[in-house]
Amino acid sequence: MAGNTISKNKAKLRIGVLYGGRSGEHDVSLCSAASVVAALDRNKYNVTAIGIDRDGRWYVQEKPEIVPDKDFGRKMALKKSGMWLVNHFEQKNKLHIYDIKNKNKEVVVDVVFPVIHGTFCEDGTLQGLLELAMVPYVGADVIGSAVGMDKDIAKRLLNQSGIPIVPSVTINKQSWQENANAKIIMKDALEKLGLPLFVKPVCAGSSVGVKKVKKEKMLANAMNFAFQFDTRVMIEKAVDCREIECAVLGNENPVASVLGEIIPRHEFYSYEAKYIDPNGAALKIPAEIGKPLADKIRKIAVEGYMALGCSSMARVDFFLDKKTNKFYLNEINTIPGFTSISMYPKLWAATGLKYSDLLDKLIALALDRHKKKLEIKTDK
Ligand SMILES: Nc1ncnc2c1ncn2[C@@H]1O[C@H](COP(=O)(O)OP(=O)(O)O)[C@@H](O)[C@H]1O
Ligand SMILES: [Mg+2]
Image (cartoon, helix red, strand yellow):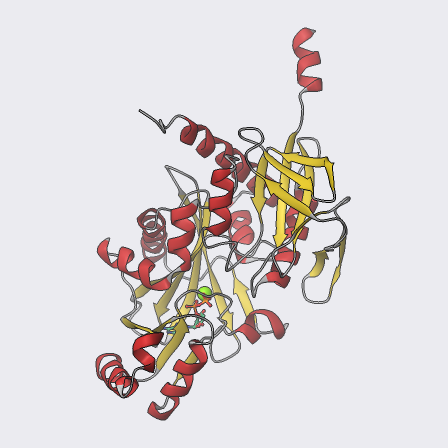
């Protein structure tokens, strides 16, 4: 009887879903978060939705509200009433959030579920704040997040682990802007990589700042465009490829899902193809790839995940050369799109893990990683 009473009264885990954020992917995040908030099992969790506006202010939503969205069907509303401040030193292992206008009003969460993409969210900065707060959270930790966001550092680590990557060079803004340097940089890149090329900001996402360069005379323009979004730009050999994605899940022993294919209906998987054109791309799950090759790609997906120090989850994206069937690991996304029609949850559904079970698993992984971090000695 006593046991029964305890389990009945057992406090539900308080999950704080973070969404919005100071990034170009703010709008996508509202849609991803709506699916997460709708699917979290209320028998197990109390859910608090915490919207972050484009200036980085946190707003605890009195009541999570899901509203219609023209592209994804639904999104989170982000009401800017009251302003809330994170206080991370109040009580260990919990995130305390206060109303700065009314210090007696506070919200406490046990696990943070960031469903926000891009700069200041997916790049280790938010994860640093959550580490300081000593609160469990979903998604890669500081290192995995930061490295996953930096295409240049990520490629160096992947290369070191023997994982195939597309040849590229990275240029910093200062050297690009120095007199006469740009011409030399472009000449060297063209000699080394040939045409066509892809030019992209090192730290960005959603194809923001990415251009395909087919003619030599377009290269300078693409470089200047990409430098608007970062201080480092990558020039990469273009691969005539199929785009293959794999979902990876886990901490110490991560597992890979079946593979999916993105079939863009534009010249490449551009921002327009991703978010503006409703018919911009088709998703094919599972990807039509023979089992031996698919298994190899899945294995490399896990190796790449480990090489970048990822944990919790990530979507690992590949280019598969249409002619040679050679594959390259393109990038790792540590907070992938999470709408119910997004690739990451759909890959798991196709592998036998349904959306709400995936959320349970991610929360369990967050608690497990946190527990292990607490066992680490921080003094002598
Ligand atoms: N080297 C390349 N060869 C062929 N296509 C590329 C290459 N680099 C980028 N692309 C195209 O541009 C898209 C966006 O580039 P990506 O490196 O994935 O940046 P993001 O982080 O913005 O998604 C890819 O999905 C692909 O369609
Ligand atoms: Mg990409």
